Image 1 (cartoon, one colour):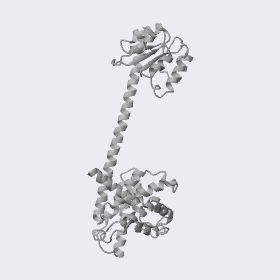
Image 2 (tube, rainbow, N blue to C red):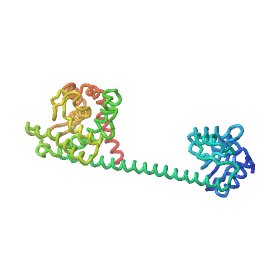
Image 3 (tube, rainbow, N blue to C red):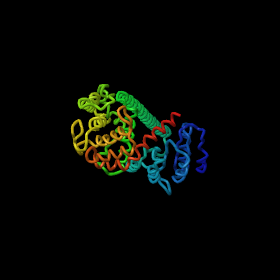
Image 4 (tube, rainbow, N blue to C red):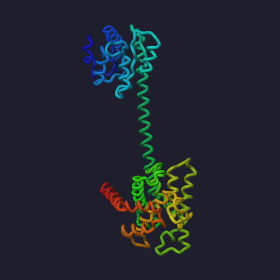
Length: 377
């Protein structure tokens, strides 16, 4: 069989592993093929250049590569192989008549997995190839296992996140039902918060703080900002008239109740970023820029940024929604009211940002309900 028969040797219906034997010696090609062809598919190739031509069409499980060849020797060839992402993982065993350690070390440093000396010892050649084939199979099994394991972890994580979100939504609905809210208060607040945070991230405002945020986790946790209302009595939550001072003082405690509720969950968690976000939202969304808010009377940047953001969208949602004790205010009127709180109730920098993106707020809700209607219809 001559070197020109190299391509015809490869039968696509043959399920055995493919070995490329590259050597300029016809004798070596003939002997090597005779030794290996009863176990492997063997393509015999007379030069490195011909090998690269065939590698464009076939991917062998292993390459037996002679070192001393004219035009391009084995060292040059393996450098090209290892620098090509498509071929770099194909194991290469060098074939050589040389028996010096320096040459062996050079080849191993270039990426060869082994050396086999010529003339071939049939049992040794077969055993060396068998060992490396088994090693490659084990590597592929391990790689496939790792990929499958990662997919399983990803699927399980997504399942947990979906379940977590459903629990949060159920809890939010429970709070809304007790608060006589018209419905979807927490969902709308979350949408408004997303709009404001997106606008914030597009600027360099407060970048030192926002750069470390996990936005998806943060938005999910915002659903717990009013969770403390679970502990407020129905006589106050559902009262249609204006609250008395005593009743309002009791209502304000929902912030502290919410923090205690989240801290109770934290006792069984090592360090949950989700709960840290949730506690900030619950604790600080009623603080005011001028220090007149509650529960701590914090002022300015002493109020955490997430609390200052939630304060704006929470008020906007309350103004534009109907309650048992009031009607809904139109979007522009609500925006104007909030703008008047610049520097008193709200962070002036965030209010300027709110003004710029305010038109997106009703659109965010409209698009959400439109998508929901489309999927349910």
